[in-house]
Image (cartoon, one colour):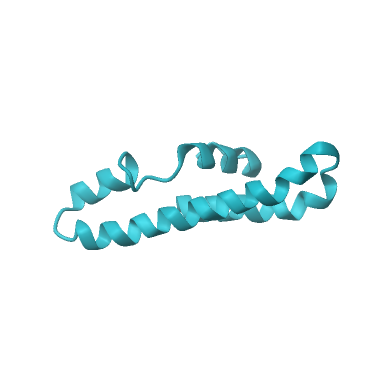
Length: 88
């Protein structure tokens, strides 16, 4: 599963369990799910940009997408993985 897929899956799962979340945390479901979706879109935009910018530099492309500005949000991935119950 790609990082974008993980982020989207976590957003979907969060929305699925929303009816079970009560109290003050209930208001966090939509903003957190929206944030995870936005992080997925941002990462996909980075992948698209890297494919063009680093067309002849696969090492640079990989670096850009793993540790550079095109990398997925580590905070969003941590939250997504907690929601999904994974550590990948």
